[in-house]
Image (cartoon, rainbow, N blue to C red):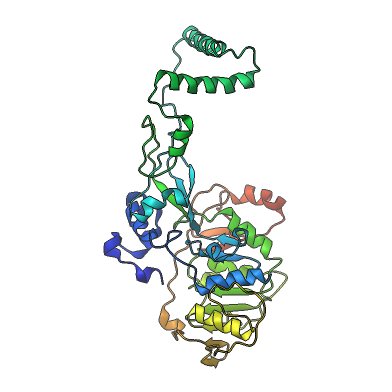
Length: 422
């Protein structure tokens, strides 16, 4: 889908996958930001399907939305942020790769919309250079500290602050420092003006003491581990979910392609997509929960609603006698839908709507992204072709070196692990 819309020559990419490759980003961040411009918050609008998710929430039928999209349109459509889990991160936030300062998307919006690569212009965090802590004689050090404290006390005394507690002295000394700067340099900006300039972009800092680091969007690139919130939310929702909707995906990227096998097999699974999809072999071979056995034989989804997602969603709303309004402001039941729900054909478990693509799964080739696994013990990429996986947690993996010790501490040793080939 997305990859087919990319102009590789214009973006300066060798292949589509380079767009979300961390090494490619650090070497040539302009490619990603040229692409991100069209998806950046404020530049795109939610679709009817996004609004349908918000309607499900209003009707108290939505447990959670797990999305691999990075545009944040679910929240824009009205789904509360607590209900949305961004499996691959979001463009709504960003972080400096040098000083690790985090930013809201609005702080780099100007640069992104102009096709520029944003850099951090926050005050550079003071880091002592290597070797700067060498001793130059204890007497000299003591004299320096003594003189410094004496000057500070004199400054405090000059302002008539009297005897203060240590904490109060620290606060007053900071105020004195700001006061002295303003006094000695009439052209200096006020401290609150300086704070206004802390952020990102092409602004200048009064003394040019800026970070200058590359700003990385809050997106999970290939090779990066998913945020802990993804696994924790799935583990919590596993006990509450009573149905699963899979919308607009190829199920080709791990570990999110494994969600189907992680959730209880007894719940209904419904696919809303332009064409049929199948799980990667590694996911299809997963062993399901010890408590339940998947009785499905030769199929993955109980119903596949194939067609343009917006058309399928409108058909569902008509079938449920829900009002179809472009803004979906109303959540009350209405009279039966007056328009055709759009269903063109039913073949077995497949329901065809406008825009459906009939493609043989064998002919499609089913190419899947190679899974990159990181050890949750040491944090390093697992280089061997075998990984130890927790059968009760989502995406908790260990390398052979960490397995003996970490597995005993993980949930006090109550969780089971199994080896799996990558």
